[in-house]
Length: 436
Image 1 (cartoon, helix red, strand yellow):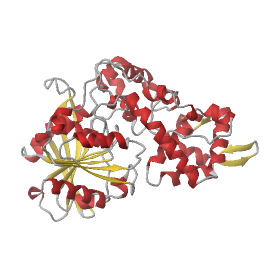
Image 2 (cartoon, helix red, strand yellow):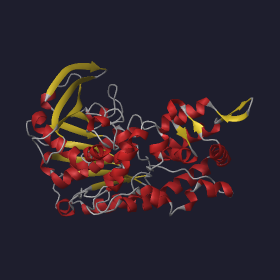
Image 3 (cartoon, one colour):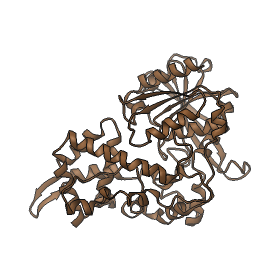
Image 4 (cartoon, one colour):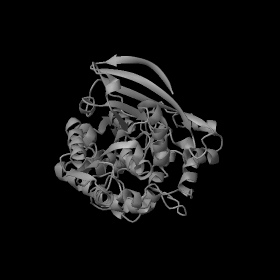
């Protein structure tokens, strides 16, 4: 472990940490990669007197949030913890994965083999590798948002001795569902979010249809080489899972067209906004391993599960919708083969993505027997009708983890730990302390 200089922000003292860990923890003497984490302590507090809280960001593929001062839930955490914001492997400053770095691995076969080590199991073993040097061997509390909650559940399955408590927000995974089952449950939820959006903004029905019809005939070239197709436009529905996402989508749609000498055209402002929302340039790992985070059957590939399952839900077919008079349905948190042809940050990795989709040999991520005997205090915020993580799956898992206490709420959407921040974390801490 190496430690860089410490520095200050309003109300906080930050310290950079770097660690070398095995790429493959089953081969500890093999290749090593670098991890980065940022320690945050409240100004005026002695860090040596504080217990540690490890934060695992949602994703996969996103580095830990770059807070300024004591934003969001950090305000509450810093009242009693020394917080470690870990950039999970492949994200942020932790040996980042993207179209620029992956060619260093060699062929697409080798790239896919490399990426097989970027799931929750490796992330948790990373955490256990760095914990002794930071805490002196003491266990720590983990806070997992979304995919970070998947990682926390794996932590409870494989290394509960490393945990004082586990706090999970919008991230209780099914212990057994395949990628296909995850998406079979997802598409009806996404459709409900669409219906709710159009009930709130009925004028968006015609706006969305008009944009889709225009793109069906004239796919748009976005700044940076991104190609906006009808399917890409539909994927803006990922906004509908956030607390203010429906409103953001409405404002995006209302100013889509401008009048030009050649007639109505999609405006530069609309296209730039769409590009910023749709590009995977900042988080390509999300697209590459998104379905792999659900893979647990060694004999079964994910095989583009979302693409296959979508075919079972014809109301999401834009061509059929435009041929009739139904509202266009936006999609959500799904990855498709066409992402790797329309997004320039993903296009060079298309063959690698195909190999990952065809890969077998994935190992189970959760141990139901060990979870049923769990002794670590656990609390989870479960959001009613969460678009990204199935509520029924989460509650089934909650019943399967001994001692887990849930807070089921419709006050927040999937991003509740960001929107609700201090109050969400305070509620979870009270639940684990009641349990303890």
